[in-house]
Length: 341
Image 1 (spheres, rainbow, N blue to C red):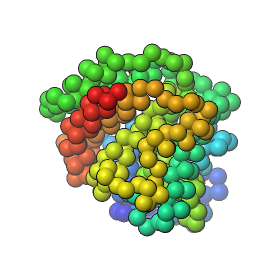
Image 2: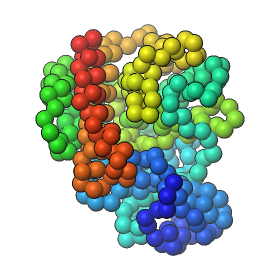
Image 3: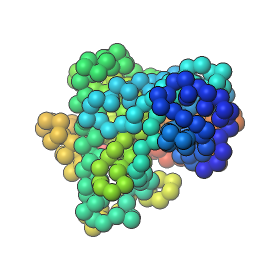
Image 4: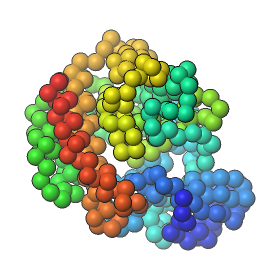
């Protein structure tokens, strides 16, 4: 962690006026994670908080929507979806230069490596089962009851998402990537019929965006809601499977080639089946399309990360360039899923 590049006195004054029970002063530390929206731990006399802000500089339209992150997590407080308590949203950019929000600091464990090397087999199995449970909880939320019926458009989710991310990709494109052009064309030509499913979707659901209790294999907070919207639930499920298809280690953070049975980690189909059981589904047809879509979306996101690094706006420039170099590999992964669809 490192010192945050903003006026902590201004944040203290704002929190005193907007966060019930707050008492300063605060000590500020920047989390190394949070590539898209810089995230900071605030340690105050009244307790620990987390501040999440838009990055400085010129941003793509609709990107880094911390106001949407705040709204969705605040709405989910009364549901079965585990989220941190939201305190306040600051839309006044004069305070620290960008919009931000403050939430509770939840004590817990973050797992970057899905192999969970420091856990035993039983705990690994339980962690993945609770990851599955939390995902089903997100997709089971009564949108009208919590005020999120207007959180996004209804219907044609994949057509909208493919259109949106194609535009985002073209806006941040730095060189021609034939695999990406081929994947975009295939997705446009192979859209499934709209089946009418509309749920809350997280948009970036993976194990390193979940926080687990310090002393038990239970998810206590789903983090990083920037890409959340109303949409089709299979995109979130396919995002999990996409992540697992990547190489293990710091870069891929996947499970490719891992003996999952020996570790107590579910195979892809077992995870899908458990999800279907929780959601009352008999199965999922054409899963390869949803998987190809997730590869495409992640490639588009990483291209944006690369562009921000080149423009000097990345939270962690070196890491951002490393991630940006993976765009062709993600595009090829999407084409492989397309061929299997």
